[in-house]
Image (cartoon, rainbow, N blue to C red; front, side, top):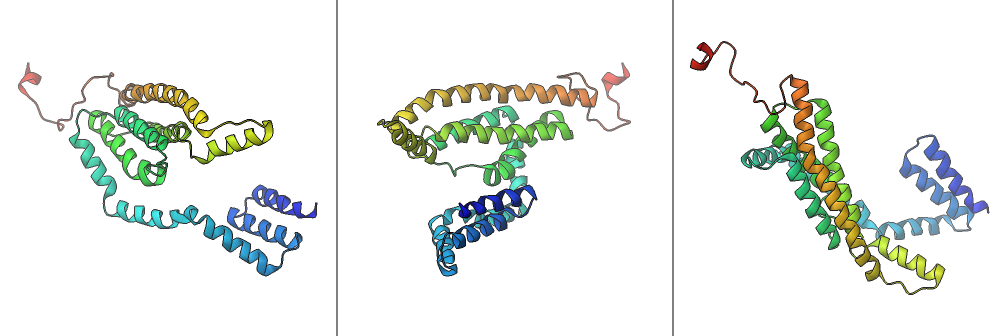
Length: 247
C-alpha cells in the first residue's frame, strides 16, 4: 500500500497548482523507489517510456515551425485568400472544415488538422476575414464567438470521426475491456460501424449550427454598429456628397 503515496503526490501537486511535469515526474520516482526499484532502474524505466512514446513530444518541433510560419505571414496569406473567395462565408468555411476533419479522422488521419496547426493559424484568420469583408470590424464578443465555433468544428469532427476508425485507441480499449470483463467476442469493426450513424448526426447537427453562425454574427454586429440587419454601411469619407444626396 505504501507505493500508493505517488497518487497522493499527484493530488497534492495538482491541488497546489504545481508544474504538472514536475509533479508527475516526482510521483513516478517516489513510486519506483518505494516499489523496490533502484535509482538506475527508475531512470531506465523513464527512458524506456519516453522512447516508446516519443511521438507525444512532437509538439516541441511543430510549435516552433508554426510560430515561424505565422511570423512570416501565414495568417496574412490566409486572410488574403479568403478575401478572394467572395461567396464563402465564415459559417460555410467552418462547416466544410468540420466535414473534412471528420472524414480525415474516420480514415485514421487524426493529425490532419488540430487547434495549433490548423485552427489558430489558418481557419480562424480565414473566418475572421470572411466576416470583416461583409460586416466590417469585429467586436470582441463576435470575435470570441467566431473563434469558439472554429474550435468546436475541430473538436466535434475529431471526436466523432475517430470512433469510425477501427484501429483507434478508444475502440481498442472498449473492445478489450468488454471482452475481458463480460467474456464476449466484440470486434473493433462492430463498434466502428455503429459509430458511423452517430458521426453523421453530429455532422448534421453541428453543421446547421455553424451555418446559422453567419446570421447570428450579422445580427450582433448590426446591433453593435447601430445599423439594421442587412443594411449596407456607408463607407464614404465625411464631407462627400453625390447627386442622390442633393435631391
